Amino acid sequence: MKVDYFEVTLDKGIDEPYLGGDPIKGIIEMVCSKQVRINGLIVRLTGVAETGWRSRQDDLPYESRHTFMDEQIDLTTTIAEHCTDDFELHEGKHSVEFEGRIPLDVLSSVERENHGSIRYMCTALMAIPEDGDTEVVSEKTFKVFSLLNLDAPYLHDKAHVTEEEEVTGCCGRRKGALIATMQVEQIGVMPGMTSKISLTVENKTKKRKKWMRKKENHECVLLSLCQQLDFVAVNRNDPMMIDRKSITIAVESHGTCKTKAGAGPQTKEIEFSVPPNLPPTSIHANRLVTVSYFFKLDLEHFDLVLPVIVGSSKSVPDSVK
Image (cartoon, rainbow, N blue to C red; front, top):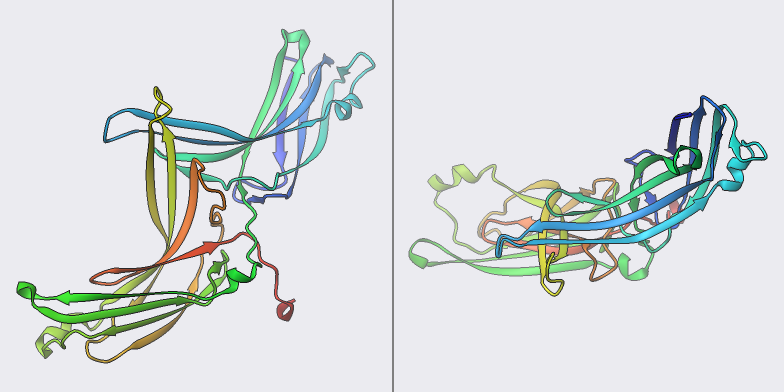
């Protein structure tokens, strides 16, 4: 092989996601030990969604694959500047820069073992006819988040949920009720920022005797931001058979103290730190992989769940510019 080195490098690292509509830049570096004839140079940007597993219910294999992005950048004219009139690449080191653009209608990168993934790949290919029509190939994975702007007015609205649960004790005796309300200041949540959450809980159960209270002095409940990943796959032998899997992950949790029985409604204001680098809520239905989020207050007798929308872009208010 006359091409000793062939490597593609992107302008962002693997942990720095591109957004839908963003430019993507890179450079291809190569070293030739001898002059070599080539047919051309291209870069392909691909996005593939894959799901697959063996169902526990029927022990059958389910798998799906969809290539939803396939962009090509032709660099043949550019590499020609490094070649002779016979399109032979000169001996030595060569660098070729390129630039493309991520389509607006893309899916966010996701990876979950034994469930599925959404992966992006940048592939540089240089055809060499004199080596038996072979190709020199270099690949780099990269991360993409779909563009979900939180500037829409309805995403600035408050959202709330209220639940009431009867609490029973020994022998099914009614002890009272627990009423809980959770409200977020804005239904649109931005990674790396804080979300203002108001929790109001009224514990109408009977007070415990003094000797029973010691163990609950420092008890806490968890308020979590949960990410739900939903996967869809078809049967390998019968495409009319569909299977679904879901997984829920608490991406961030804050502890807060329990309310006291008989003390009336108690309200707590929480500044919830949303982790950075979260893929945004999926905006497309009927996809192989979808992402959604909700806040969950893990109470002793029931869970309080409030769906929210995690975005990937938000304009900076004039007051902080």
